[in-house]
Length: 132
Image (tube, rainbow, N blue to C red):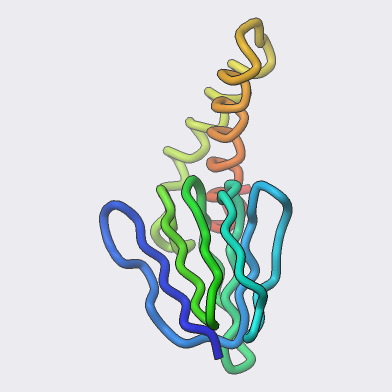
């Protein structure tokens, strides 16, 4: 078993023992099982999947870091939402605004990455909530 803790600036979202967790990181999606090697990585906007006793739960996650050590997974995220917590209209508006900015891009690469992450965060929230 792994002890999974997910914390955002507003609240502790999750703190339970789980069988496995799949996390979107800046280096790609990683699966963490008990006795995983120590790891620290930045998070990429996407869908985090928690597997426990044959069931799975998904959260939209964005911004922050993950640390894996000694069968403990600590996630400090800017956003961690369950499907029923997603404001679909707000996420659609954010995605559309980011798409518009990205389609006519003329700024710096660093600013482009910020807008791209904004788009990916909105897309993850919509995918999780069924808002497409």
